[in-house]
Image 1 (cartoon, one colour):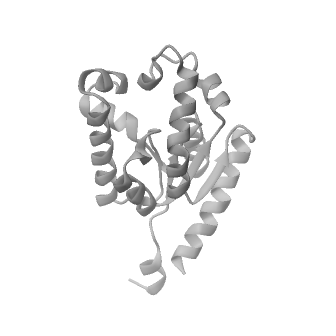
Image 2 (cartoon, rainbow, N blue to C red):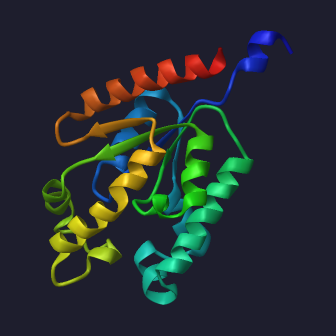
Length: 186
C-alpha cells in the first residue's frame, strides 16, 4: 500500500437534525448526485425489528428505540465503508455516546429549520410518535430547545434548510465535505 492510499479515509456524510428538517430528502438527493450508498438508520431499525418506529415507541417505549438506535450506530462504526450517506433519526444526539460515534463516522451536517417550519412540514404526518399530542407545535418547540445545543456540539456544518433550496443545500454540503475530507487526509 502506498502512502497516498494509506492516508485515504472513508468519505461518509452523516445527516442529523430534527424531524422534518430534510434529512431523508437531502440524503436521497446527495445519493443521486454523488452515487454514495444511502443508509437511513430509522429504515434499518424498522427492517431489523419488523416494526414501524411508531410501533416500537408504542410497544416498547422511547428508551427501547434509543437503545436500538445506539446499537445501529455501533454497527455502522465497526463496519466502516467508503462513500456513504447516513441519515439519522432526530433524537440520535440525545445520548453522548451517539454524538461521539456520529463524529467518528464522518462529516456531520446538521440540517435545521425553525420550529414553525418544522411544524408546517410535519403537521399532517401520523407517523411521528412524539408529535401525537394535543399540541404538537409546543412539543416541537420544547424538543428543539433541548436538542439544538446537542446538534451544534455534534456537527461539522450547520445548514438552515428553510433558507436554501435543495440544490443549494446539497452544493454547500458537498463543497464543505470535500474540504473537510482533504484536510483529514493531509
